[in-house]
Length: 201
Ligand SMILES: Nc1nc2c(ncn2[C@@H]2O[C@H](COP(=O)(O)OP(=O)(O)O)[C@@H](O)[C@H]2O)c(=O)[nH]1
Ligand SMILES: [Mg+2]
Image (cartoon, rainbow, N blue to C red; front, side, top):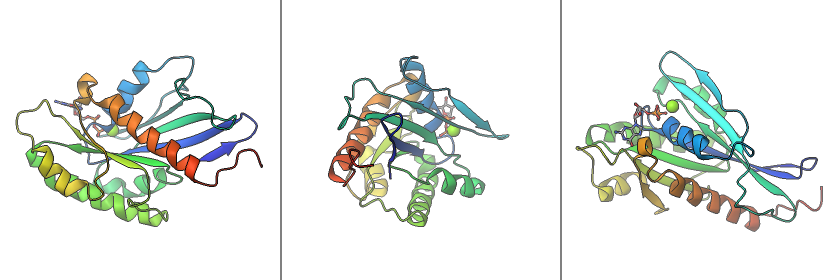
């Protein structure tokens, strides 16, 4: 549920990039961070373990006008993909408003994609969410590599609700903003539908 800050007149929305280890979640966020106006973004925060960097930052997209007098601030998070970081993933999903599921398109990674997708469903369930109602989009990343699964096959396995899906090469920035825009739009729509009433604190 988005957090409304009456003092700063902001609606805060949390977007979590989920997926198996090394699918390109951090690469997505780094690209977005690099391309975002310095005036509108907060610091990028990195929590490093031996093998993985979990990062987050927030920004105020200028293209989105205020909603009922409130500016919308997006908080973007990645989760660590390895199986043993499950408690971190659970924690990061707390208060989530939208999910980008980043799959690794490589044929040899299909099993890991499926495992991580199942793990997402379980961890959302812990937070009282499910993919049927939670705004989410799917990104098939690493389309530049030679041995990738056809999108139709990825889609059959990883997109049960037929939500918007995007091919991407995050390392070159391709598909990154398309994916972010789609999930942001879904969240904004859900805000408008919800009984969010910023006028009555
Ligand atoms: N070839 C290719 N490599 C990518 C792409 N996106 C990310 N990578 C690489 O994949 C590795 C893992 O990326 P990272 O963003 O750290 O994955 P994360 O574990 O999901 O956060 C890094 O070496 C990236 O440079 C892509 O679209 N194509
Ligand atoms: Mg990462």
